[in-house]
Length: 198
Image 1 (cartoon, rainbow, N blue to C red):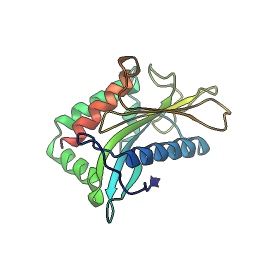
Image 2: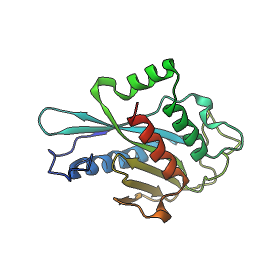
Image 3: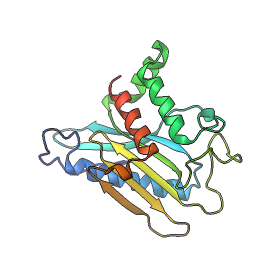
């Protein structure tokens, strides 16, 4: 899934993403949420957000599930944000083989990792549902899902959809206040910082 924004507009010198790239990231996340809903995707799903430089000032934004093993989310009694934090620790001190595989995947085709996103049950802050299928937990009983993402500028994207709702609600916060930086946001931020240092 990918989105091509309009040619970049001037951005603040300290910003990694231009306004058009932010728009493209938000659009790509909305598409991912809709596709996951239509396909009844199991959760959690961890995505990496990538930027491809095209001819001229344009960029292509796309989203790919990270190549985690099916058992990644089946650690007993651990909520997803703890799994993410442990993954970030592994990113920070990878063994040579893991570093080689990871850096190759992150930079495939010259792309740059500019964010991470987690699709999960909105109220899933405890261990995963024991009836999880294929290494991931599905929403049970119509529980709403949340897609939470963080980009390289620290921007927060949150998309939620109530069961049966035709459209999703989306919030993009340039500088999220402390009450919006929960454990998942902190874990995604740590994961992104570790990945960009490889």
